[in-house]
Image (cartoon, rainbow, N blue to C red; front, top):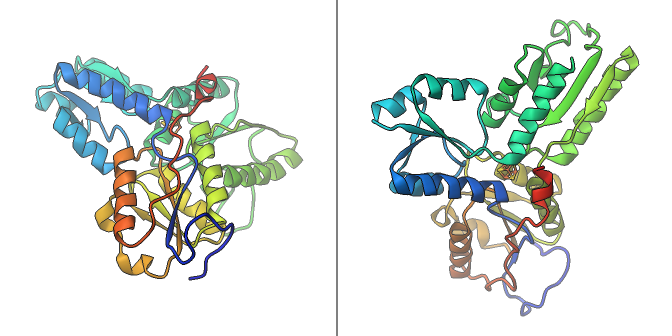
Amino acid sequence: MSSRGTPSNATVGEKEIVVAEVLGFCWGVRRALEIVRNAARERPVAALGDIIHNPIVVEQLTREGVLPVTDPVEAKRHGLDRVAITAHGAPPTRYQEASVYDLEVIDTTCPLVTKVQRLAQKLALQGYFLVVYGDAQHPEVRGVLGWAGTERACAAKSFDDLPWDGPRGTGAMQPPPRKVALIAQTTKRTDEFTAFAQALAAWVLPHGGELRVVNTICQPTWERQEALARLARTVDLVLVIGGRKSSNSARLVEVSRSLGTPSVLVERPDQLDPALFAPVRRVGITAGASTPDEVILAVIEELVRLGFAPPQRLWRDDDPDVEEFAD
Ligand code: SF4
């Protein structure tokens, strides 16, 4: 595999690790972990799903007294009196169920997700048909649609997912509703969301309709995508460290591949395949927003063991402007 992009200070012939400027834990994940860990120090708490989509963190939390459950009934069965809502948020029905079972709610919903939930509710009340650009099965999207509180809403990743496009295969397209609003799952790709918005505009506007577009992809997500785009152009392979269920980690793999740089996802150091790295001279490292620092450092150590020089620099771990996005 040939080396691409900017030369570095490494000794000629040395195998290099280049780390993205921004990667790993985002502000919302750090906040969620702090809340739930503080709660578990008092007594065990049930988590309604994975607090964040990283299996290593979920295992750590379980040992610390944060027990994943599927619903309030299971929490009760374990004799627990508190349930934690995950960083992805949940629909209002989840809060109601907790109340019915007399469970206290520890809410770790990221404030940037709460902001999208409120926006969804407002747009629905204003009479817009709400389209959430995202994965229908993702807990964040299910929560946002729940807060919209209307049948006139859907999740969509393509026009095929929209409910008003007429019978499949007939070529007949029904006119869309008069008022359509488009928002995004916080961890989506900005370029794909933009393309979807443009295509939707090209359909809604000629029918005399109104399209309101709000980019709700969160700042930490696009910062990580931008940092990766800068990195991917200079390396032979991008290694994304993140959970297999993590939406933003999957997006990082896609971003790299769309720029023509091969990319693989690993959850932990023992998943590194030495044969894959043998022909690689410059490997780029990035990590999803739910990947802890210690896992990233362990993967870097493993790469060094495989013959790479230690990186010249690590990443900056703060999200300095995020507070203003949470207003
Ligand atoms: S990725 Fe964005 S929305 Fe999700 S927890 Fe992090 S900051 Fe919040």
